[in-house]
Image (cartoon, rainbow, N blue to C red; front, side, top):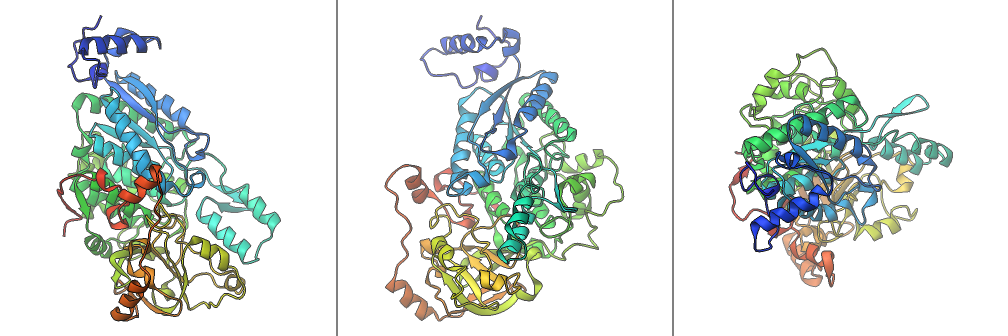
Length: 578
């Protein structure tokens, strides 16, 4: 009954529970799983684990049952045994204080479930912003053969004849409401139209960015980034993902053999060309760190100077993810980027990126992906800033910023934390004008904690009502990939860690020069030292639990906001290469 022709460390024999008798462990395992009606023949197949991140609190994953069914079909057709297992699920709007605070916990959950349970390969189904990074971080550390499947974007809606979609239009309409341009009745009406189906945001926010990056990394099947969540194309991709997972189980192609330096450089190139979310830099840094790679922000910035934005999608452009899919999706974009890509990079199909592009359907006329000689924006969407205010670097999404503000010097108006911002930003007596620079401290990894997407500071209400649409805003936090504006993020070191940001005062002068990649506080080093000596930074100090672990172990933005003990023990190199 316990005999098997398969290798001792595969399928149901993998990772046997420790009872001191391996054959008894297998005997007991098979007895219990046979209670689910499985036969010896089924149990002798390659086992494909399917990470189920469905949750009633996660509408971005609302198509999870259908996707799992399609993956299972693909696994069975290819001769494997699909086994679903649950992990933590995170949604941006349903996680307090922020989903980023829980990303590392989800990655640990994913890693340990991949290690603990008997599977030969895994399908990781994620979608909402932090789920895909968490799954790839965990899988990279576990080292199993794995393939990523994203849930897909939601459909767009319509408000009084105008196409709308989450969440760039969420922010645009809320800004109108704050400015008094629309009333409560209309904003309630818009609220009913922004999210017409399940799925992730329909613009190039973090979820769509990570979907494109997963395909660029070669860890998702070709053509998988763009099909909307509720389409037949998405289900066919899910079935194909199941088939590929069985092939991975048979070939033993591990995630570390796919996610090499070439893969990460391809992903960074795509991030820049799609005008993708700034959050993706943090996530890519964390994923790379699990495999021993360090992201060189200065080299990334140099790559950005030669990589234009080609994808005409909101918030940088005009279209939505369903338009990108109709235009051919990632295959269309990758064809345009071929001269800049590592075409010899391996993918989960066992073929190289170049080979997959040769197998792709032929190109056709479309207007969503621009050619290299007619870009949406002449450089990559993201620029890296340095200076005495950000010794470890800062980020700006230059493709979504106001060109008039990208070379700017102004007076700082400082908010000490998110509560201070909430209490004063709409005060009509706030001393602020449109040329000032809004500075928000203590929303970094340690300070918030969790580095929330609070870096997209609202325009003070009195200025918004006067018609001001954008201002320079600086913080040690993040902003949603769906947001837009002249917003400087990820200032490192953060204020709570004693970075220079902690000692900025209202009235100080700050200079931003995106062209020179400069972010400077125009205060002498002596004055800053005096301020630091007078009031040392003090991050929160929780007494117990996950909050304490987070404070003890979380790294800064330039190391991916991962836990230090989860990063690879040895450095393999830097990406991108200089």
